[in-house]
Length: 443
Image 1: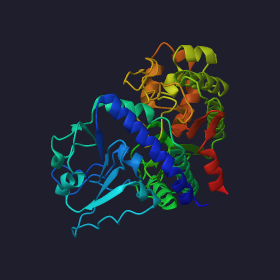
Image 2: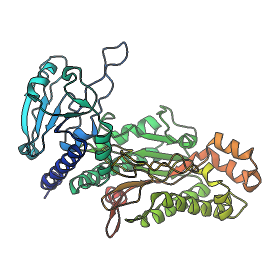
Image 3: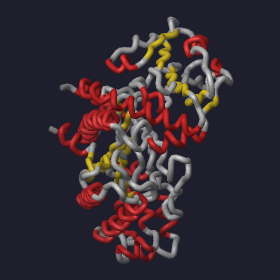
Image 4: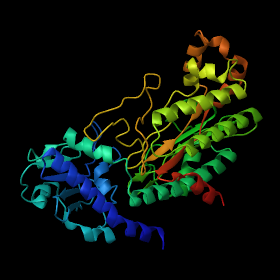
């Protein structure tokens, strides 16, 4: 059985689960039906070009259509969902191909070629109708747009992945793995950041607009910028280190994988190896019932050990964590939910009622504060960075004597380290979606 056939087999149960989620959420919030819009292309200010299109996540949850603006789904509990599929007939751009796939047999399909045809295609909407997605001028006020209570109920349940979603994310990891192998080879061949990125896209066969987020391709000190957004066309004189944070998409579901490499420096490679071992230790501890906030604290405790082992601090590991020194070297959170979006919705939710659990004051960037449960897919991405602004603040603080600045300064030219895998929480323990894919891609 090939990959597409496997997804076809898993899709019916996936659709049934999402229909049940929507039905329960609609009933709880007093709605009779829902219209889920893919969204529209948005024109750039004072221009006739558009920004890259990004589909509404809940539209992608129903159908494997990620690049079909102005399409919509109408769901009425107990009825076959209707897919309004937009196929423009203009001559400036190629129209979408007619929809195809076994998943279509579960929908009533209506193709339209004019935006004004949405209202007629949806028919007479009765009762209270919830609309999800960017408000659509042609649909007017017949619906209640993006009801917060309804979205909260859906966002909370979204963390629990169906078997179909897990398979899509596993495939997204397999695609990303091919890109990571190609990117590392390009780095070893002295390519620039731009050419490394091009090698990644070529290996994944995904355009930049198809990737779930803009690749982070950082050579040397650029790795100290957490979301480094540039792609230098010239290679550094000495390309000593390389951090790549890059994912891929499958049917609207994302992967998110990071690796760091070095050459010509045994000290940096030893540090990368230690962060990699730290990351694998954290991955092994992922289990149902575990508070992710506590796991984040564990990551800082282990990072303090790494700092001590490599002589970057003069105090004990315990003291470094207690004094908050590790937060200078790891200022972001340990990870986040992953799925229909890279930073998937619901990470700070405490319940389907919209209640929240905010991150602790010591770790305000932590994107996930929930207790892990089977079906969650989370990223585990500890790092160790030499960020100039944070190091200068630490140097000027009361903790400066706890740092071996000679060692820190010597490593600062490498920017930093991040190792990231996508991990599925199961009843029997963690399932790493990233490492097996990378191992297969390296063969």
